[in-house]
Length: 600
Ligand SMILES: Nc1ncnc2c1ncn2[C@@H]1O[C@H](COP(=O)(O)OP(=O)(O)OP(=O)(O)O)[C@@H](O)[C@H]1O
Image (tube, rainbow, N blue to C red; front, side, top):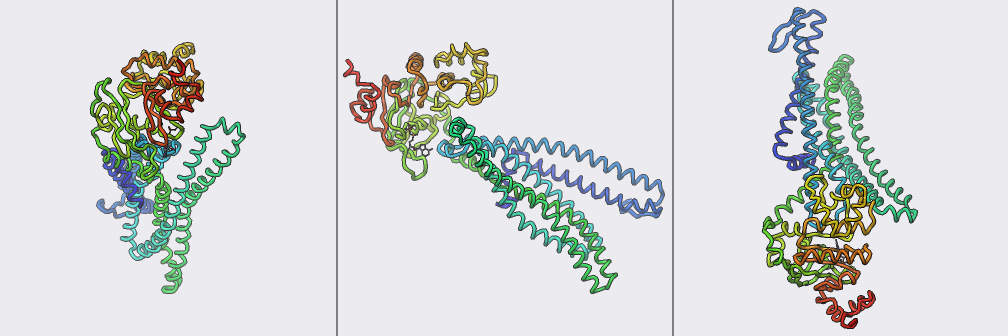
């Protein structure tokens, strides 16, 4: 994608009115730059006359000769320069705060894009990459591409003003100088732009890799420390960071190269122009040619240098902008593709039977299905269990009930209504307890209410949920009660306490469906039994879906669904599945769970 196309796409991602602002901002900075050139030019014209006492002819004003007239002109010029500087400060102040708002807006859009990614795609994303693009990626897009694009325009306009003046004053020398230096600048930008984009990509890739590694290492720090493998992590991070910082060094090197090349070109230009002048007009010819070339060259080179530096900055940040744009674009395309009819109301609680009708699902298009032709019914208010060997498809089935994964074929209905049509209401009626409860560094109340702010937390609900999750006595015994903080990822709690906090979180909203995916695996049997009892007591309006390897947990389920390699092999009461599936009978026997008929 060309740098121009990237800038246009970034502008499209900004809120309404931003393009108009950018145009106004650019016009303002350009006008101030032109005002500056005019004021300084005027000073240069007036000063020699003033010092020598000679009259000076000024366009529009006429002849200036007396000291008083000169002083008035100088005073006006000084006033214009001061005013221009004050306006510059104002424009920069307005610009920087607006650009900061742009950065936030692009970041918000990108985060929303990531958060709205369909589940099947999201599981393939890396969370460290997401953090990095929302933060560093957006910063690079706004400050490395968008703002330089605006300065590029003012640079072009002010350089054009200088060139026009030169063309009027010394047309032949100006054209020669411009063609000569312009060709060198073009060559430079062709060589440098490609390399800048390349190094920008390498920087993006490897700095992302390094932060990914650090995030992963922190998450597995205990195992790494035990294995004495910290130096391996350090080396891997070091290698990635070395490649990234070398790439950044190359970008910074490339940004200074044009200055030196153009300065050398200027000197070589003197020799060339002087040589031609010598051959055509001898020493006088050579001196006057060099003088003219110097006048034009010294004015054009700084402009070209700044121009190249800005372009280099834009090119090296372009890979970040490309990534940001691509993600925002993907999410917008998805929004257009997603049917909007997902806001229909749910039937009453007692009628929310969940039905799978010939449902199949594959994580990758054309890939091996994780679920095959599954038809099942979960009556509203029932307590059901999904069982089967590891990888049989239980969690996949759960994610489909949660509305996170859509069937590749077949249909899921809730009380006869397609799940897609009631998706929003359905999701908010579910309490979900995952295998690994993700807690955040905030208070217990905030973690239970899943609320990052302090407002809107219903304390009574928090306490009731903690009560049902068998956690209330423990929380009340802590110094700050539900206002106590739990440390990063809930490190200040035991594994079982974390799970119970997850259960309390799921119960906080009085769900009509409670989904527990291996949610009690870290609990001792008596706590688990107490939780099961508390959940039974909530009443038969709540459908409970449990995934558990520990069969004692699901012994009393109304229906047990047994999965094998993505297929629903059998279902019925626990004992019925034991009789129907020899594999399951073996597992039940190993767990010491003989069929009830044999126990009697
Ligand atoms: N994100 C994914 N991308 C591709 N394949 C996946 C993904 N998640 C799961 N699978 C595959 O789908 C199949 C079913 O996995 P699933 O997690 O549903 O099994 P499970 O019965 O819940 O297993 P476990 O008891 O070990 O949690 C497995 O073969 C698994 O490898």
